[in-house]
Length: 310
Image 1 (cartoon, helix red, strand yellow):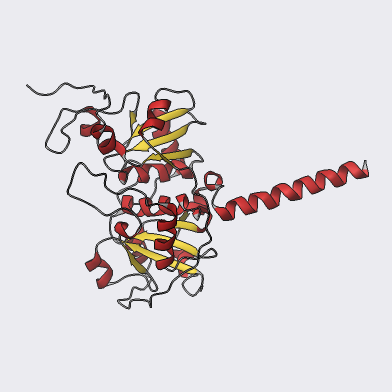
Image 2 (cartoon, one colour):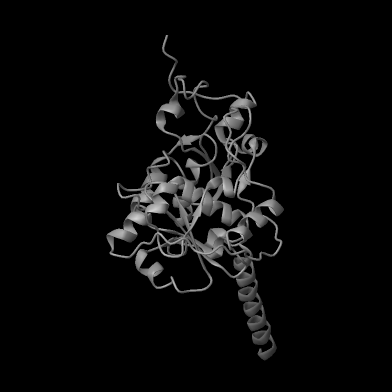
């Protein structure tokens, strides 16, 4: 009995140690809850003197220059993704290669032991959630959170802002395999109408339903996908809805409790605002990074519940 008890104890300790290692490597992303993924202004105010804090401001540069949270560095999505382009035949906002991404994150001052908080300057929720998902993909999900309500919430609670730009610093990140959060068109095709997976179109309903327009020359959506508009999980103050309302939103769309949610939008940004909300409910998530731009360029089949105007 004593030997059996010792074996059980060693197994339990090993499991706890393994979980800690995986969490530190970012491979336990989807075990994180709302309290891990979302922080309040009150909590952040207690962390401003933490030397391991990396605070990233996402928004317009003139907003950042006018006043930002002390210690925050300005972040553009082009800093951590492929550059934007006017060429519609080239995919926009794609995830960089693993080594390239690691170097980009180091230039933001991020190290293995950093505590990273991202916030939006005004209403740039989806660029901020895209940045957060990028950190999760890079294996830093256990160390990264989003400030609920962004800079407006920070100001509303009476916390100070500054125009002082922090000194640049370079971090050190260990090489690690990416967390499997990104999928491509072949993966999506292989999981259409597959049990245990729900493909979600996070675009506004007019794009999901068609008809064709100047901004959506190819009407409709990926076959079998359901529509949950990316803004739906957020209230008028750009704060995440309470958990019961979030669950109702996903349930009404047909998402089952244990489904993996695979989301897409136009180019892979807006969908991340939806995936973030899903993660706070415990869903496993994946982003179709190329999104509908990639699907259309490949000439793949679409569905539409409306017909084009004649």
